[in-house]
Image 1: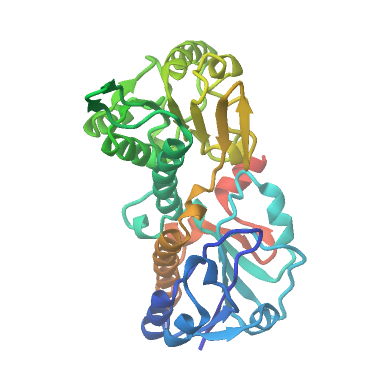
Image 2 (image 1 turned 120 degrees about the vertical axis):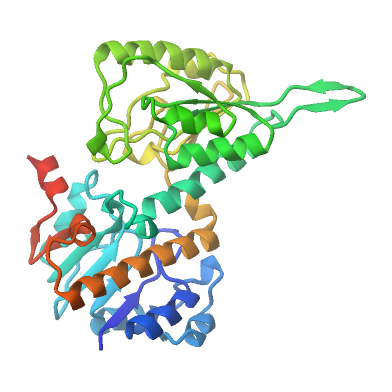
Length: 372
């Protein structure tokens, strides 16, 4: 019978990849033994006692490493990594951008899966960790910005006069951007959204926002719903249009990323300097360099009274909910892996799409293509 280890996240991340309710499902449906590191879920509101009631055994970190067949975690593990027997590792590494992390696993006697490489398909939706976390991040970005901004989100009509609603600009209409749009609209703001993909316009308008569009964008059906790099002429016209709309906004939420590459620079310093003091920019793309020229990852910069928040991990600020969503994603992937193994299926698109390292070598086609 296989054993699974669930680790406590390091470096201040309060989330946990599997919650107690899912532990019970792993034991009952998959017939695995589950070990959980001491206090792994405490910061997300899940105590050791709750895990034990779900059927898990609580162990120290070192003991879990010795006992497991499968190790599940969220963030990259700190080296050195060595295992006495072949081990399956399942996490979220962003290996297309952080290629250096792979060196830590190549000699670890491990088979490594990174769930952020999940194919964008209907069958894989229930395992899509990026969509789960992006949706929460888009929501939290608006809530955080509304708390920081002196503007009020809805219009107020009082005996003392009318207060205009905040103007919110969302850059990037993917999962995070669409959730930010929906949240800002629910709060009563006037919302505009920009995306290089013309196909995003219909979704933006369906949420009640205005779509800001630059004609002539390049699109690629193979990009999995992400933006692709654009021509110089397009980028110049884009810069002018974004500058105009940024300068008029009270709140800007930027979410634009290109897998494996630096985030596109969309908000120049000159544009920030045209914003009114007290305005707020939340840059969800800061991990990969940021969409704003002033963004610093995991920091808040005050530039002439405009606050620029660089944070790609706002879902961590909603740890209970984010852990519950991740737990479902991880369980469904674990269940799929067992099905692939039991049926003896080779070249399964979900399994091979997420597989990064096998037998000490990088085997993922997307990563190999980015290295060349």
